[in-house]
Amino acid sequence: MNILITGGTGFVGSALTAALAETGHGGWIISRRGGAAVLPAEGDAAFTLVSWEALEAQPQLLKNVDAVVNLAGETINQRWTPAAKEKIRDSRVETADRLSRLLESADALPEVLIQASGVNAYGFSRSGTFTEDSSLGEGDFLSGVVRDWEAAAASIPARRRAVLRFGIVLDRDGGALPLMLLPFRVFVGGPLGSGEQWMSWIHRQDLIRLILYVLDHEDMSGVINATAPQPVQNREFAQAAAEVLHSFAWLKAPGAPLRLALGEMSALLLEGQRVLPGKALEAGFRYRYPDIRSALEEK
Image (cartoon, rainbow, N blue to C red; front, top):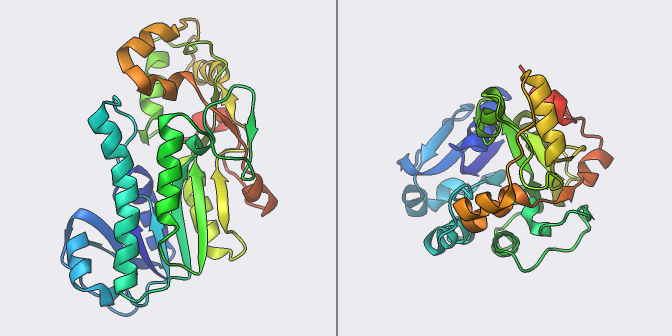
């Protein structure tokens, strides 16, 4: 399968590209630091790193692209200054718009588009439970970003579309988890704020496997919650982390200092949403790491 990937050098994208190459797929990874566009040789399963400008100069190379995976987006793990908020939003919306124009100029109609999104689509809640049928949230920055992102992605041409709303992606080798575990490693871990806020998460290996599953199953389309089947409250995560690391979860971090230090971005730590992966479970997808303890114990 010839696959076009944006964000293919990031935390999720690099693991996805490796998994696809192992199973014989190939294609292009669009990157700002990519090189010239070169059509892979027939039977060559390698992915080619290429710049936007190079493909836009030779869009015909994408004429026969089979699938598109759009993962591109500025990290939200930064202080949300007005400039940062603009960059977070524009990096997603403008990439979707640019991808749409590129495929249209190539006269390409991929069989499937897998579009990254986020569970922040549902807004923050401590009492609600969200499935793929739930309404979008309103009023906070991230839910607005996701709304605009998904709307922009709707113009990307494809016969089948799957919008994967990612939870927090966990893996011991990168992403948020090493920082989340650091306080427990030095015996100063504990719940954040009230500890009641929900954390909808997924192990990176399961996320990659789910993306591959969606690529291979034509009945998987529309919004798909890319989360583990057992979301946890922050205090449950703290207890599991302490037990796995043979540490303690005794030092509670009050919410007020976090809000003062991090500003609006503190909502990522102090708020959350309980999101369930109804479509993945109904389709028979099997998780390797369905609960937080198994994810933290992954070797």
